[in-house]
Image 1 (tube, one colour):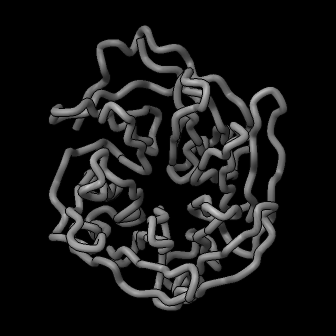
Image 2 (cartoon, one colour):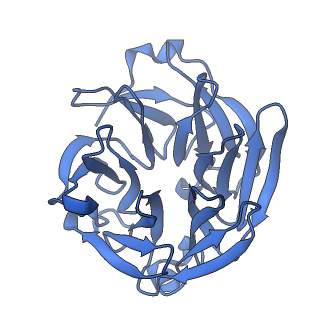
Image 3 (cartoon, one colour):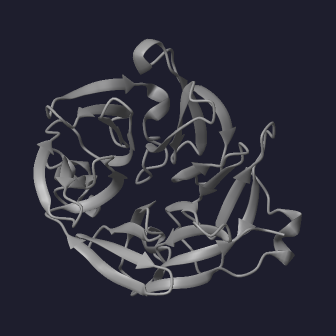
Length: 296
């Protein structure tokens, strides 16, 4: 497991941008062309927004517990949801998962059911119009054809599954394209690992996942243009893996306990990070969207 980076003392404190009471679980975020950020509020069944200089506001209420969000090229959004909260366990989640197609204002236009899914988590929109959605309980990646509404298994592997020795922790979590586009990067929170899935012809899986690095508590993550990978750790820290490094550096992020996702801020000042106040671990802190400045 990584240790705290030596630059930790020079790290400025995160700057809260939007704060929510304990019990709020903020899960995933995307940037919009106008510079605003949209993020999901799981238990509130809501998508929130924040625009620099304006502040936070509710963007949309949805029929389900929203997890991950992707912007569609024609406008609107694809949203992975749970029909029941994850606090009820896999049995409560089974049969209620879906992908919602929302219009640009956040209104539901269509619903694509995933009746065999259990715990939808991160998602990735592909150039062919399909949405890859990971299933943290089944250790599976689903391919959802947004146009026709069909659903199939894209890849299933034991490396994606949760760890029976660590009950309560999700398996496969975040999914992003690699910098060169030749593979997909996938995180597994239970095994604390980042993996690479090579891509074959027509973007199909080209082989089994290959280990990249171990990350303490990795949740969602982001790949920078220079190849640096930043990861939320679902703890009180943010992790950074430099190209060629075997071990990530970890930077404290006080106030962002239980952080779930991050994305570069459009002004280049740092990372937008979602914190849950450590809710899943019994924490009593506030949830928030915050700016995590780049470490010195």
